Image 1 (cartoon, rainbow, N blue to C red):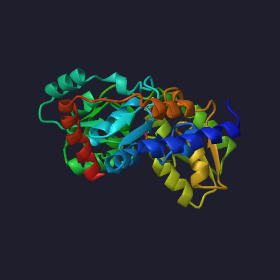
Image 2 (cartoon, rainbow, N blue to C red):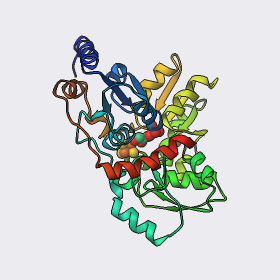
Image 3 (cartoon, rainbow, N blue to C red):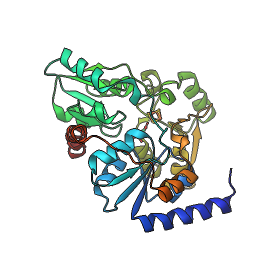
Length: 307
Ligand code: 13P
Ligand code: SF4
């Protein structure tokens, strides 16, 4: 682990390079603290999609995972989108292919296909509308359909189903390993240790874990909640990277992680050195075939317009 001085120097160099290259640096809330601190924007999937769509910069350096950089490319096709670590994928996004979604859709003609943004561009291109964890309930409500197909996260789909009892949600069997592994016992143990803390749970967790929550929120919604809620202590049931952002959003408050800590190995593959190298070598560019991007854009823009 480099010392604080080395980190500060590398961060200063990254800022310089970003200016020279006309690049904007966008980082997800699960990224390493030193990457969050050097980024122009941090946020959840919805916030980052909006930043990507709005930027005037020529280059977008995306510190996150592959589907996020693809979403940026879909929304800003004329920009150069760089993913500093090309192996940073998402196991949940890999649990469905475009072909599989097209076949599922064909089995259920006329039923709208709702796809979590944690999916490939190809999968999005077979969807009617995308959602994030921040707006899934709102977007499905706005569709006004009696039944929807929901992919790939069965847990987020279940959260939508219980929030909208009038809608039948048909689920694809996908999940996030980092969130799906959380157990009731882990959350109960944290509650016993910190009885005054509010429990914030991400909707990628299983329903029995969601049942133990005081609030079910996306990562940026957790940041806002911690900053505005009168409580001083919070149990955080999402990936560990958010703790750094929480301390910045609500200084002086106390945040407790589960044991063992929740870690997404893919989110941690990106390092400050790789962000630096991406800017120096102009790599690794993310491309989406124009026809796929055009179809996927309709689903993503429909989401951005609603939620
Ligand atoms: P949000 O930051 O949109 O809540 O997403 C969580 C996540 O798992 C992203 O991979
Ligand atoms: Fe995928 Fe889960 Fe990692 Fe998010 S936290 S990138 S959903 S594996």
